[in-house]
Image (cartoon, rainbow, N blue to C red; front, side, top):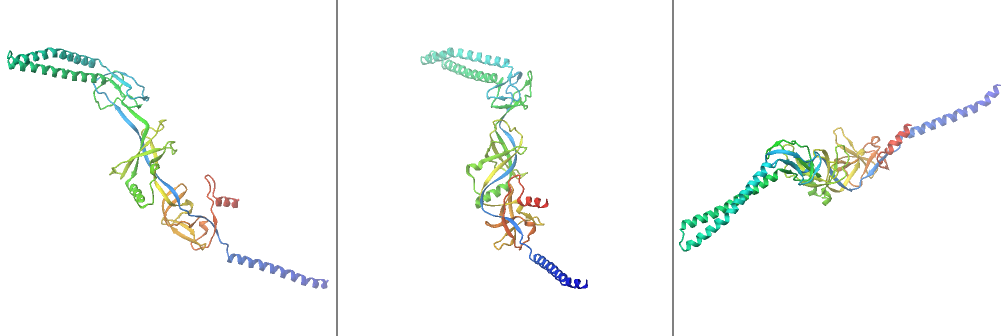
Length: 401
């Protein structure tokens, strides 16, 4: 029995030695992996200059294209209101009828007086002509001829006076018919039938507003205007020609208005209290969707940036001081940090004014696991479509599951 145990001893020692060798080999491999960690992968995008149309979004309000405040031009009693409040009216349409009776009497009286003066003129003119003939023969005195000539001139002046009186009475009679001076939509009436009105009273009877087209008045700071002019002069921006006058309108709820407007003019005076000036935009409004006084936003074109550099917003972070920075991969495959100057956000990208150059590779994903000076492996970055998650987000979610 003791002999069998001695025979198994070499086998046991050999098995133990083999197990120890395998264990030591595994430890060596583990130590080797910890000493040389794998190069981290980052997703980067190579910057390429591109042409970008720069716009600015400005607040504004709508105002009617034309406004007419209806006021009476003669004194009288309103006999009838002849329009429906809130309806569309045409230029020349009768709105109110003022009692015409006293004005008709004044017109008829002036017309009758004119007829009387015209009837007296022939006899007075003949008398003056006879006195002129008799004066040659000295059959009448010079005084009698002067009196006859003066009477003829007086008769002519009286005719001219009554002609003017007839014209004035006709005008006042016409003013009893209060008509619409412009086409548009009329508001509520401030008077009813039987109301007494006076000529050119401060309270208007109704208001007509032309809504198609309609104005949109927006404000812009004078500092922004100076910046825009400076960029155009230095060549950083170029004017967009006729298209530069096109303006897109956003409604109060943020939805785009279906029709484009046109920039009509920029005001020449800056408001001393706000430091801003007004831009007036003409917008078609055939369906009267825009009403006076509505708050809207206008997307006004500034110009074209021919060599713009855009980077995804997720590729920009901030220092404790708030400075925007980005990480780039140089030609040696190492990470470098750049301090940026950002112009504005365009969609989900930043427009970079300075800090980056065309062709540089900006890290978009994997920034948290690298530091400046570290070597990295760059993989192409696939921009996610709207409504989709970024590739790294999907990968992280799969690994967590």
